[in-house]
Length: 434
RNA sequence: GCGGAUUUGGCGAAGUGGUUAACGCACCGGAUUGUGGCUCCGGCACGCGUGGGUUCGAUUCCCACAAUCCGCCCCA
Image 1: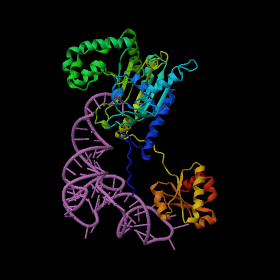
Image 2: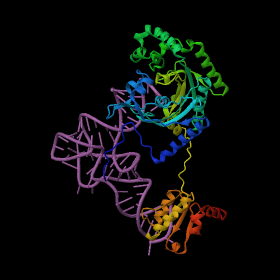
Image 3: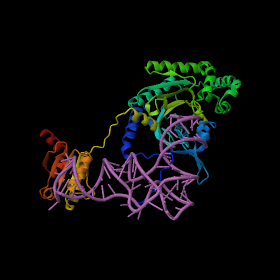
Image 4: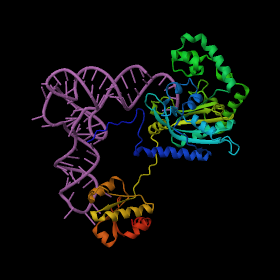
């Protein structure tokens, strides 16, 4: 036997035929729900100019500084595989001038596909992974925030994920955020020496990140830190209040976590995460979907001042949860008819038979390995065939085949023509004869 | 980037410094020259992650590397 020396790249995964049904289920469910909310699909490149991500995500974010899967191509262009979906979509929105007056606003789009981050693989984390996400451009209204959140909740509910916890926060507008950041730095600076090394760095580069430090002592210090909620200007406060009241109107439960921040720098106003304590992650609260508002990002990437909001969901993580909760995925791999041919002379006839059945819309298959009748029946049984049609010398002569109902073992003779043209009638007759 | 564990056939899993690497499952064939189950019989690793080293001899000892899994950081 030839020993394969090839292995998939670290952190990637093959999605095999047995698993794709689950992917179809997730993707089709998402498409259907997005359709109902009037979001349309957008497809953008898997790679972009490096700066599309570095400028949008923030030069100090971890994604840019250590997780970007980037390289220089033969034309010495600095390319990066997309680490997340929003930046590329915004770039496409701007480049194709989807903000133009001929488009109905808001522009609502969704995407699904692979994302890339250069990091150590572990449970629920790969270098190539998949996200399903949405973006809505052009609406500043809190109702748009709530629509996006409600759609996310409906998606996860429909997919059978239990124990969902919606956590929201606001970062306010630019001014509010700056005022808060200043207050936070002033509060933290006296504690600088007590902070963990990581948080000391964060204080320099992105002070808000100190808030969600995992370090216990950091957490103690942060307990008394000022809250963003006390630094919102009137407009920001009003936006956040309206988001909350609309969520209540829709009976969507949520909690506010004023310490929640985001890994990407472009967010402002409403940010949210949907978490679950599924046993897939050892019962610890884990985020499977996250998003927020990013007013200003479109402008940052060269477009007109345009508000936006969206979310991204990690598909592999979602599926770990679905597995743990034993979500039943509809599988559509049932075989209706297996055609058994006996003897090499039946080769053409059995092929014609399966083709005729397929043209009727019946799923049909046959043997391709020159197996004997017994072997073919075993295969039909393994494939869970509903019917087996047997064709041998006599059948070819008389143009009448044996049709066997595998569940009962009952077998009847049916003319070729009837099978090839009206298999549905054959099925009907067999059922009535039961 | 740091730390831990693991790596024997398609899958699970024994095992030993020395002629043919258990066993189970799955699969293939036969008993039944045209019919699914059971049973019985037979077949199925030029090979024990990769590369070196020690040795008369290595899957078994040593070293390096890789991959996988898990944790930290961070995140979906």
